[in-house]
Length: 404
Ligand SMILES: NC(=O)c1ccc[n+]([C@@H]2O[C@H](COP(=O)([O-])OP(=O)(O)OC[C@H]3O[C@@H](n4cnc5c(N)ncnc54)[C@H](O)[C@@H]3O)[C@@H](O)[C@H]2O)c1
Image (cartoon, rainbow, N blue to C red):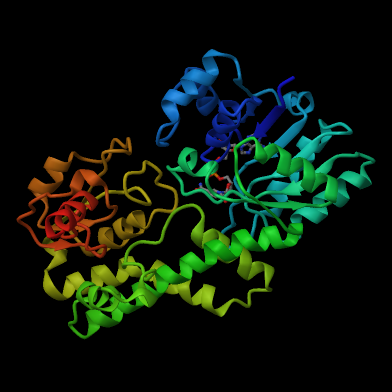
C-alpha cells in the first residue's frame, strides 16, 4: 500500500511543492489548508503562486488521485505521517509567535493517534521539537516526532527537493528512522542529527545568508559615500580570486524567511546576536540609503518616481516582506508621486511598465525580474543590484564560448 501523508499548511510555498514531490515519488498525499482561496485554486489544478515546473506535475498527480486537497482538519488522523508546514512568523517585537504555533499544534495533536509520525517542516525556534515530543507524551499519545527543516529556495522547490540533503532531527531513533525512510522516497541524502541541532542548522543557514547580504550592502554604502563604484570594486575583488567567489552583490535582502529567522535566532539567544542585529539595521536601512543618495542628485520632491518590481526577489510573485514596499514608503514621503509596477503581482494600484517608464522622472529597480533585462531607460536609474547593466547568464555563456 502507498505511504499516506497529510501536509498541514499543504497549499503554502513549502507544503504544496513538497506534497507534489512526495506524490510524484509514489506517496498518497492529502494537503490540508485553512485558506479557502488556496484550497480552491489547488483543487482546480491552479498553483496559487509561481513555482517552476509545478503546474504540470500538479495536474498529473491530481488527475490520478495521488494528491488531494481539503479543509477538513480530521484529515490529520487518516494518514501515517503528518507534516507541518504552516508559517512561523515573528511578531511586531520580532519575537517568534509561539502561541499561534502552539494553538495550531494543539489542534493537530487533538486529531492524531498512536503510531503516527509527526514531522515539523516549518522553521522553528530551537527546543520546539523536544517540547512537542514531550507534549505528545504528556497527552499519552505515542507518536514519533521529528524536525526536518525545509531548505529550498522559493520558486525552485521541485528542482531542489530531491537534490538537497535532508536534515533529519528525530526526537527518538525510531522517529529518525521513519523520517529518513519517508524522505528516502525522494532520493535525497540524509543527514541525521539531534532535533535542536536540526533547528539550529536551519536558523544558522538563513542567518548566515542574511549576514552575508548585509556585508555586501554595507560595503555598497561605504563605496557610495566615497564616490567609488561598488560593482567595479566587487568585480576586481572576485575576478579569478577563488577566496572571494561567494561574495554576493548588493541588493534587497527581503522576503518571508531571512530576517524572520535571524530574529528567531536572536530571540533564542536572549536577544544577544550582535551580527544578526547589525545585519538587520544594514539590510533594512538600504531603501532609505538609496533614497537619501538619490536626493543628493535629483530633486525628488517635485519628481514622479517609478519602482520596477515589487516582489521580494526576481522572477517571483511573492510580495511578503519585500523591501520594495519599504522603498515605496520612503519615496512616498520624499517624492511627488510613486508609481509601482510588477508583471507578477496583481495589484490594482500598480501601473504598466510602459506607464511607469513614460511618467517617471527617476526610476528605481525593486526586483530583478528578467522582463527588465535589456531595457533601455532614458531616465536616471537607481539600481542597487547592478542588474540592468549586468549581462544575462546567456550573454556570459555566449561571451565565454566566443572567447574560447
Ligand atoms: N518560503 C520559503 O522559501 C521557505 C523556505 C524554507 C522554510 N520555510 C518555512 O516554511 C514555513 C512555511 O512557510 P511558507 O512560505 O510555505 O508559508 P505560506 O504562508 O506560504 O504557507 C503556509 C500555509 O499554511 C496555511 N495554514 C496556516 N495555519 C494553518 C492551520 N492552522 N491549518 C492549516 N493550514 C494552515 C496557510 O493558509 C498557508 O497556505 C515557515 O516556517 C517558513 O519559515 C519557508
